[in-house]
Length: 79
Length: 502
Image (cartoon, rainbow over all chains, first blue to last red; front, side):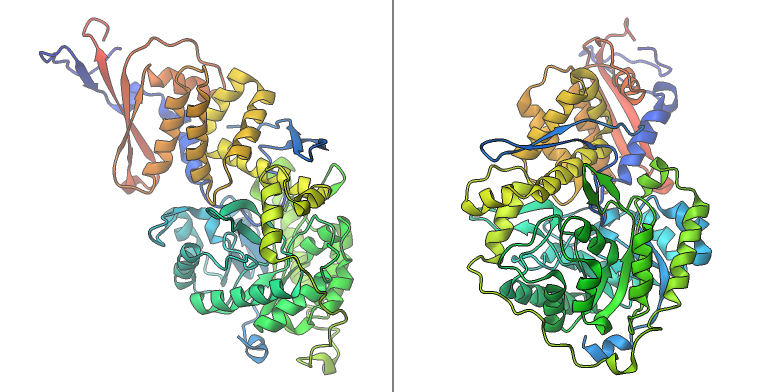
């Protein structure tokens, strides 16, 4: 890994390198995603609909043992 | 708070709900918003079971305070129809919110979301309808009074959604609402879209329910839109109030002598998905404002604060207890196999399947919100159908939690047990859990990777399946930079690489 920091090799041969975040990570997209997490940690709001990013397929079924079977299809929300 | 005192509550006008994501709507439609009703649990990130300290997003709290509008609080985590009574940690946190935002009254749902068992109680992950019998009405009223004593302001209960068919031992929807309100001597939040949804799902007609409810106890109304899915009308808060319900609303509001607020509810993700523009929403809020102005205009003078009409229907005897009902419905709703006679009977009600699917949807959506890169990695690796089966099986094995962050932890634990052959999957999940963890902590969190995390995470963020990675040890330290608000800093410390390769 290329680094802009000066390397010093301790006797154990393990190198720990700290690099400035800006030069190491292309963080923008990742941070944007992680930041959106912070707005989505609360309780489900007061509504009784499907989550738009996890909508089930439209088939319901109950088998002979009365187990409720749900089969799902996905409608993606953009990350 | 008694009936007479309810009339002295302030008339706040018409407005809308606040949940995170609705800020642009509220700002754009400010002219037609007299009052904002906050759902505080939607911006709490979790509660410590040892304390009532709420982890409320500070940016959101600041935004609300700068609104300079009257505020109400609408609870969405501590409903009032649980046989287990109200939740002490949620109640304490809600009391803090009351102290902060100073509403003249608050509201919660006449539903249950926790079930007692012989072992630990479990959460249902969704508001479920109570059994409409006399003993249940009694403990609902007790919960209302207790919650009111705890939070120190008047409490209204909201009329709920019910996708089930009425049981033989139950009384009508309107008479049950009336029974609770009379016993608790409290006000009612009449959610007309919930009632309309119930009617469309085969329950009592809206106007029949309204006729059974003491008009002078209705202090607040909720309005919303919904959507049709596979023959079911769902209270999805996905759009404007449907036209037939608009006409009902105009009739009902004119007959309410004590109405204090009308609140419009909508979910922000549906505004984007349905391309609902701000002009339409503003026009809709203007219509609601005009309806508000007609409140009580068709009330006969003799009906104001008069004695309640006698019940048109008596409670029936029932051997079924509220907790038995909760246990049966709760277990089926979270995906458990029917074992008792009541569960086998309930399982034949297609409304139970609606609840069960809603709960999986909410939990699956919550996982995609809290573990987005992990879920993308799973979908890319397994395919969407298999991903959904994985989520459904997770939902079956792990009961719901109150906050999606807790479900995220359980899902990561589940992935660990499943030993999936997806390289670095758990490391990605632990990275995302660390992001959740540090937002309420001043500590830094380090996450280990056995590959270079940057290309791995960047690929997933772009929606691409990562190429096989060279195995090498890396460590990411995540720090919450409080001075910069909620922005994150990721500092990577690479270890275990030789000078030649660096």
